Image (cartoon, rainbow, N blue to C red; front, side, top):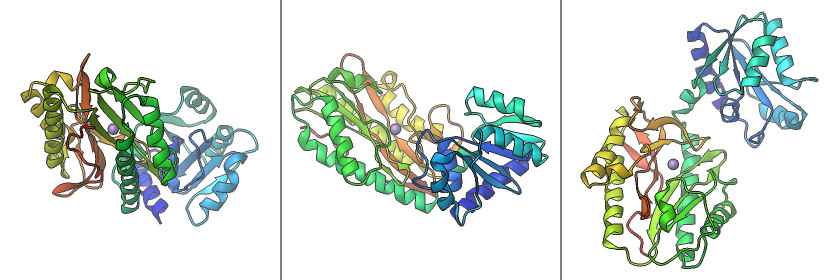
Length: 362
Ligand SMILES: [Mn+2]
């Protein structure tokens, strides 16, 4: 049982810490630990309490029926308090005689304060415990992410015919979303990003009503979601024939991206992979135009562990799914980013994004 394996991993971590219980309320972490699908929206009022003895899920009546059904055959027992989730949860902890509670660092401060005052025992903030378990994907998770990557690949193939002068960034973003959703994506992994012409020099430009023009670089960053799991990819195309400078920048980013992917294998520190791309861009004279990290983990969240940046000392390990996304952004001129989703393996990696990467001149 998937949920059992994940719960066991968290129990081991709890046992090592000397604390007797952990409260988990981050939605992605709740989804992960329970394995419940199609139950929680992003706002769900739900909290898990795990000890070496119990696995309790607290929620309210809006989610209780779906939780009861999903919990069948899992370690989780569903509690639907008459009053508030956190009042009952604290009362239960006291009734169990527990002395120490771990709370995720991501909880809102008001909730932390409430629990600290209400629960009789010691409260300790812990960071990334569940996220560190989520870092290594199981085969079922990888299958979903590969399917999400394929939906994004297909949307890219579809959008190429729609990139004509006069169509706006917002229309392209909507068309990418419609294509992914009508082919099976649950919503989108994040709002598609389309940045054209001078806007493309901002790595996270807001989508605007700017119409595409001949000569534009157009960067599209988007992802699908399949049974909870995200994909993330970016492609940049040119409207018309590329100028020598556009072609030079594109070639540098592509070489950096391909070289970095070649360097991905289990056991390599994130910062070494980052350096492969960064050093190549620096050699080509574009180092100062690559400001962000090379990549990030992807899973239930579009940004999760592990990090792949110049500060990431931690190694990427087999089973992690990461992005490799170097970019060059020249203010006033435009930018190029190329991003693939990559599964880390022993001795290498598998690229899950299959959309073409050569310079496409529309
Ligand atoms: Mn990304």
